[in-house]
Amino acid sequence: MRSEDEQNGIYDVKISDTAWEHMIEHARFLANVSVDAANRLVDDFVKTTETLTQIPERCPWLIHDAIPFQKYRKIIFGNHYMALYQIKGDIVFINSVIDCRQDYSWLL
Image (cartoon, rainbow, N blue to C red; front, side):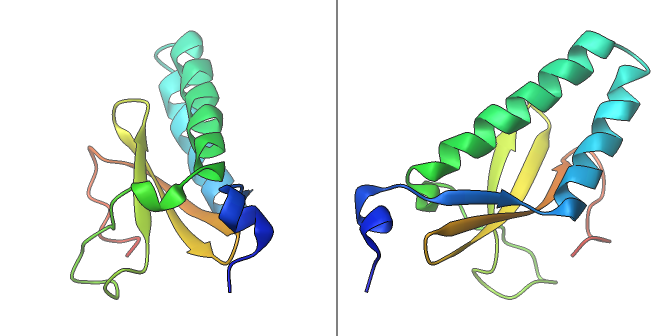
């Protein structure tokens, strides 16, 4: 049975320490080129993950041979970055942040 918050479309979003560490690494790297761009990336990450409080199921599944089918969903932000997340009950867990331009199979 879905909770009242789920029925109303309100989910709690929790960002793991690992996801924050990934985000900080990406922002640090980008700051070497532009501090403003790094700040925009972090702002976009926060805004994007906040949207997951409403209908987090709208985002597609991450499809990769190395992970179980329908384990993680993905949401793109900042043009080249992807947050991976899972929905458990009325909580959205952000597990990782990946630069889509890099090989991320090591993560999976």
